[in-house]
Image 1 (cartoon, rainbow, N blue to C red):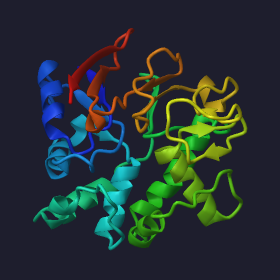
Image 2 (cartoon, helix red, strand yellow):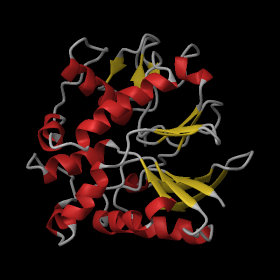
Image 3 (cartoon, one colour):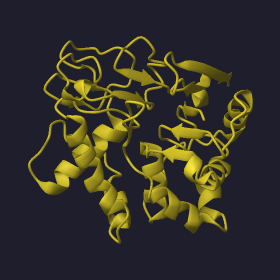
Image 4 (spheres, rainbow, N blue to C red):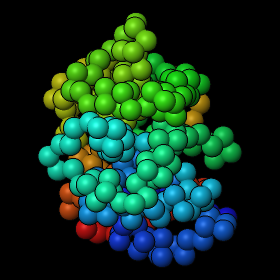
Length: 268
């Protein structure tokens, strides 16, 4: 049995198939982890979701910001420039795929492997247990009858920079951290505007470099989301797998259940 993890697929089915062929992936015995942004930007979001859904228990996904955009759009929300979701929305099995997607988690933790997977990141103020609680609260909403208005409410640019007191604002902050975060301060204040590889200010640094981050004593973190940063391989506490296939880079696959992580990649 092997456990593989793939970076942001973003509707690019062909490179995903090529990667799985390279490692002779067998869903009867192997498991594929997907670190979010399964859909959007690429041309085959429909095929990607069908394939992953059909893998059943052989596939473990977490939701990314583009997956949340699909949920919001399917619920009557806005479409944005660059979205490639209309074919999926019009598909005869769209309702089944949306239903499957909204029941996927925001955080997955495997204690045996000592890996935690999220799409974007964790606040340095969160322990693993706190992150699980925050993710669980939002997953409960996504799996309830309130999922449509909740997902549409996420179509905002006004994300709280720091952890607020109100329940709704706290949920917005938590889901933004899990699916959008790149830079933050040591105190967990987020900079939502910067998307480059390096910060322009000393206060805001990549979320995973803060030495006193509480989650660092609990687990290693697998993430995607940050194409401009590329693969993150040299940090002991994290593995970053978004190598920017839709931006002319690569789609990267990693094997997690071995002492030294093994990598495979397909170029765009």
